[in-house]
Image (cartoon, rainbow, N blue to C red; front, side):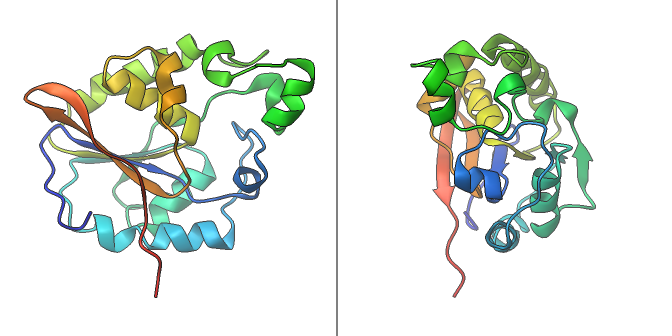
Length: 199
């Protein structure tokens, strides 16, 4: 990643570091929980990988797990809060696991079914589409700090797939991802890349 050459329209995505709920598998939308010590350490390892890249804008979700990842990666002074980067609103499913949900709703999947009292895939897609307009109008590469399900919808929309197809892009915490173009066509350059371990 340190030798990466970014095109003007490229977007680098960072999913925040781990939290207690990402470890337990609980759906974490608006619940504003902190990073674990391991999540903070992973965020620090982002700094040498990203510091030399020429970002025209840095955007972060307003939630502390994304903001703290941004800060530890060295971009707190450059970052702007963007409300469209907040995680999926899980509504009645906030704080519970997929296993618990499946007891009452077998076969449920957030990308196809959405969440009762929360957001549908189409609503999350609409937020992402607003964001993409801003990203594509930027004067240079962009860097985003956000959340797993939101970023999976974003990559689907980047390559002209419906929001539901975010289900096809697995995304771990504290990973690097690059959205780029191939001869003018939106494309993936890098996805779900793990950070090098500290030594």
